[in-house]
Length: 151
Image (tube, rainbow, N blue to C red; front, side, top):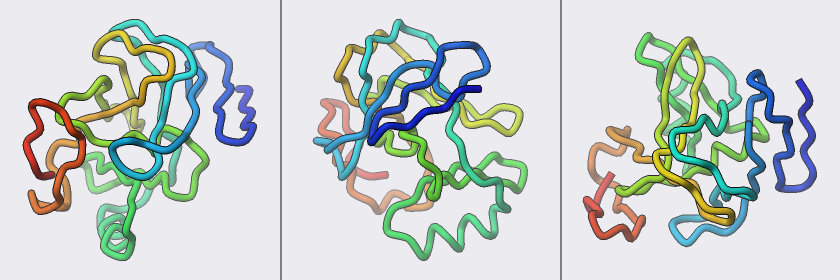
């Protein structure tokens, strides 16, 4: 697998084994902090890529989450979690939206992102985080017409 990182741009080949199948960049988000943006258009229902990270126990993941302002942790549901915090994957910067353009799939120890609809070049990638450790107390900043107000 060929993996080159130049600044904030992920340039990876598009073979089926690539972690990221489309060119992405990170940049300032209108939603919150840093976001992940497409450098090319993506058709609907296509795999964008897998998020890299460290596999840890849920217990360790929750300790890390409690000690951090920003987290990039996904729980698998089997007592394990993936922490992308120390990895250079742009997918960890996908912000929450109540009207997302991607969905997250956890399968076979992988965290995968797929497009829900056609995504335009330059568009920020968003995902509905679903239930989170915030227990409905974190104000949502997505700005979507159907915003639920809290995560």
